[in-house]
Length: 618
Image: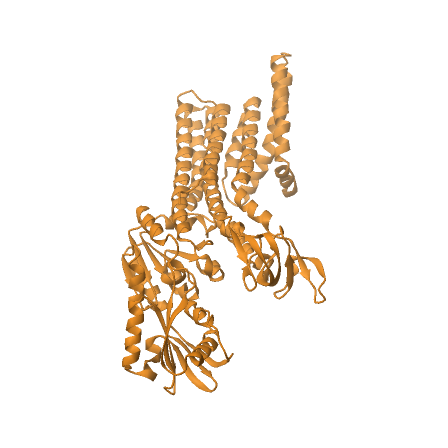
């Protein structure tokens, strides 16, 4: 039976075409040839053809104790055969089958955004051998370290680092923004992007499903299969609603002794539009977001995001660009260049944005740091040339420097200038210096935060590990309501948890591993694209562009998608109500009711498809 069911499902569109031809022939026999017997025979044949796939699906549902829509339709059609209404049986099954075909076609359309992504997934790469020759190879068989040649107009097949060449890359498939990005030696490139100009040789860091592009596709596909609370409620409602309709039909039949009326109740009571409306909105809304570089980890995230009243931001990499540079170096003890060489050697072991700023400084003597130890929330301890060094905040170096007046003055001056501080101190008290590091605000940050408030966010909070002076100077240029500085990762998580306990719905925006505790504690965890690897695992929502404007778009899209779901629910329930009123008032018969029912399914799908073209104003 399973093979027959699979065959009929696969050829459903062909069955609908066959049934349509038979219906036309039946009507021709009836009106042109006055052949009532031929009319009845063709209608009966059409009804049997249509009933078979519906009945097999109903039996499969009953085997798992599910009274589905197909069960109602099957009983109703069999009842129509019993009372000799072959034309009703034929028309009802044809409309039901036609509705399923149209559902499939329109749902494929709503998934178009994901299909566009999957179509962009690279399949092969031009691999450079050790002898300099090249050959084509499937990307799934590439290992990290493989060298890949990418020519002008070609698609980048892997994530990697540029070894040679320079080019302009279109990264729309990753960021959603068709902006050409300059790629030079040392820059990162991503699978699925396209080289508009230039040629590159790239060392592979990830290939196939492990690439950023592969993870985006996987995330979006998983999200489209997720459910909101509304959808879970609708699914449970449908499980009880369908047997209820069946019971009502039996009661109506017993009270009125009108068998035809009873089976009509079963047909009109089908909750098809109710069941299909919410997932159709989900698929279209998440697909729209994916096309814009906004990755929702499920439609439930949309529901939570639209209810958020407090958004807490980590400063570095979210409100700021996340690429700070050393602006000032105050040397209190020791040789300036020697201090830089040691600091670069130590900070080269860290991936923190402030560490990267120091590690980018020019050196004269390459050194190696040993016995590197990270002190959580404070900095790094390490040895260079046999001497122990501390590199971090004031709390880390206090044990070595104590109450140093010159250090205090230097720190106060740099804090007043809005710099983030990293202090280097040697355990032998011979070297002491302060690095003043600044980061730049993201473009349009102030505008984006103002607009978030206009969208109903009541409180905007900055949480940062930076000193209070730096944090307040940054916040002074933004519509930030609260600033909490000098916070460790666990402090940020505790703040978020306390706010939630206080009745607030909190979103946290971060971009790195150190933000993971706060992300996990929030109602909605939002990760900027700069922290992509961590974000895929921890966040509910990933902003691939790393732009605050994307957060605005995400909130608008979330609100519009949930509104669309509610519209579909209203359309579905209102249709059923009006059909029953029309039925008991004597205005609606089975075939007409089935036509209206199928049209309601089409209406909710078309309503959902509006989300595909929906363009939130930025």
